[in-house]
Image (cartoon, rainbow, N blue to C red; front, side, top):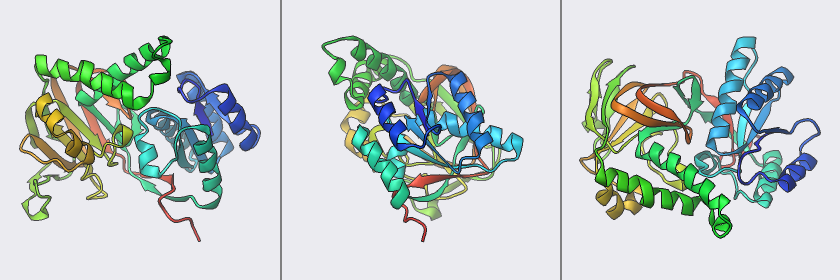
Length: 333
């Protein structure tokens, strides 16, 4: 088990509790990227059959990426991966059925892993050397960037410290920074090209017969966008189901481009959150590789972590899925 020592929910009492449950020497606490890479090397050398990460989606993405790269270099098989809900957004927790993030939920998940946890394959996307279930540019990355700043501010302020839960800090980030920026500013302009096999634009009523086809090299989208995101899983952070078509095809991931403004986002917030909103300014594609160009540096998020400003990004469906612990799946007989 690898626990992110910088995650808010990872306290010393929780680490001690996990150390009592997990076999001695099999619990690792990472507090930096260098420590994380060293832990990944040890995991590959020891050949663990299952690796659990304790933290948010970013912790999961980093450990899976490092372990996969090291395992391939040494000709070792990949372990099965799982996640304990100890971070903030936790999109993967919604996908895999991880419990509430307090200590009792983590203990319950470890018990369920031994008795009822099944497993399944999960497709990932390769972005800048990382394997991730989702990523994007625009409003979602800006919100994540502001969310980290606001969360840190709340935690440093005694009066606000106990109110620094994810739902509130995300709401403050969206209402206080993201929406005003897009209301008062100009949305970045994107050009998105199909860089792989045939891509398809999903019709508003999701009718396969109406799907528009784009061959390799074709321009998928050219224009301003408030949101440009892609994923192999339905959820964004906090259970927002904003990728409703990601599971339509196993050999494609869902690219979603939104060009509507903050007023539309506010008035249709519930249906956008549930993944049921449709409109002419919301386009969905099924793709296996894309190249994105932006008219100005725009923040990029990979697995919920903002990695910097980018003017061009490439994303490709990884040819090899990983196996993950999934509490929604039946256990093996």
